[in-house]
Image (cartoon, rainbow, N blue to C red; front, side, top):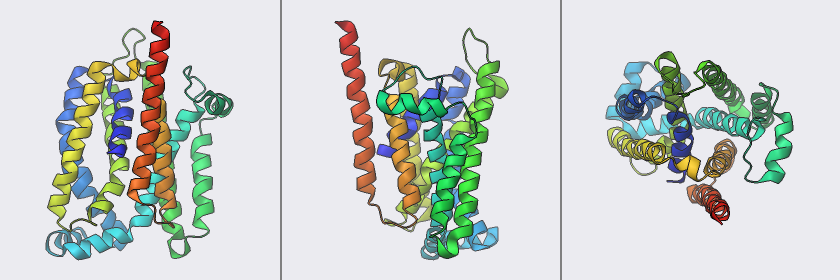
Amino acid sequence: MAISFDNAIVNAKVLAKLSHFWQQIFLTVGILIAIVGVRFVLPILIVMFTAHLSWHDVINLALNDTAGYGEKLKEAHVAIAGFGGSFLLTLSIYFLLDDERKVYWIRRIEKPLQKFGGTIWLPPLVVLTVVLIMSVFAGNETANLIRAGFIGAISYTLLKQMLDVIEKLAPDSKKVYTGWAALMGFMYLEVLDASFSFDGVLGAFAITNQVVLIALGLGVGAIWVRSFTILMVRKGTLATYKYLDHGAHYAIFILASALLAGVYLEIPDWAIGISSVSVIFASFMSSRQSNNKSLR
């Protein structure tokens, strides 16, 4: 649930810039991609590349030997954690180093970090340095961790740069994305959704080995996230509670760190969840206090 809040808040920031048509695409076509593509097809592709099996063999495992499929997917944990952790860590560092941001929640942390925000490639370089240091202790998984970390950090960096270009090209009057700009925003949201979902797919196998049931169960979660995202956009929640965006990115930083640390350590899901919820709740309460002061 905590991860869902993070995902929804970050989604809302981008979705608010899309036209009504593309917001509907996010709820319809996007749901199909989330359930079939991210929760079913993507894990199969991961097993294909990490276990060096054919599409047919992996499909056969997924449908006829769910326990074996689950084991193969768990063996890909380092690659999944490396990509997801690096992608999300790069996202959070870009936010912290953003030198154009005018609103501060924890000023003592955020204001000094903005001094390093002028370099486009600094966030991925920081993340790749972290991954390289971790890879020293990865043993046989060194190559997988470095490869996945590199792809994750660079993937987010390229998406971020494309969105920045779209932002500059969009009309200053409305800043509503349509056409190719909206398509890029939509693709960004789908990749972001995938990065948030990886760990959930692995965790689901601890409950059941039924692949279709896992896809449907996680799909229900995807529907909730998207519906909540649309609700926040319609209500203008991020504008009303100005520190929620900060809280979500701090929570994403926690999640990303936990994903990368999870390569070596067993970190309970409840610990990650409580930490993330606490940060988001604190940002919500700080926003309310700020709003109350402004009304006095």
